[in-house]
Length: 156
Image (cartoon, rainbow, N blue to C red; front, side, top):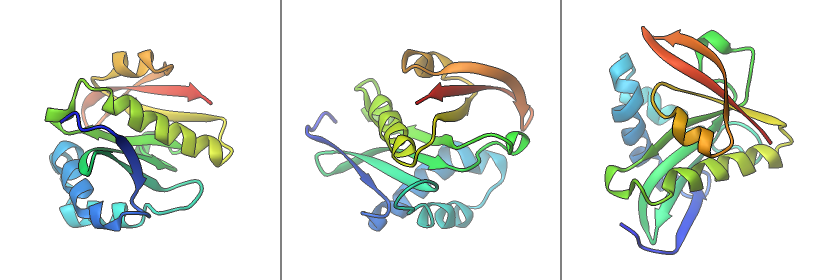
C-alpha cells in the first residue's frame, strides 16, 4: 500500500470519496452502536466547512484512499461541553503501520489551528498509546455505550 506520494484531501474537495468514508466509519464505529449507514453518509456529506467544524479528510496513497479523520464540534454525548474533537480516525488494515494515522491526526490538528482553536479532544477505548506518542494526554476516564473510554486532549 506504500504508494508515495501521500496526499490529504478534504471531502469538500473530493465529495466522490464521501460514500467510501461513510462505509469505513459505519463498519468500524457506527454500525455496532445501532446507527444507519444513511445517517453516517449524511454526516460525512455535510463535513465540508472551509474553516472550523465539520471537516472530514481522506489520506491518499497515490490515488488510493487509505484512511480518514474528521474535525467535529462534538463527538461524545456525555461531554458536549468541550470541543472541538478529532473524530473518526480510521486506517484501512492493509495501510496500517505506515504512519497513516499520524498523517491524518496532523491534518486535523492543522485544520483546528487554522480555525483558531487552542486545543482539541478525542476519545478512544484502545488507542491511548498511539495518541500519547503524538502529543495527546488523558484528561478523563468515562463510560460510553457500556464500554470504558479515555478522553484525551492536545494543546495546539
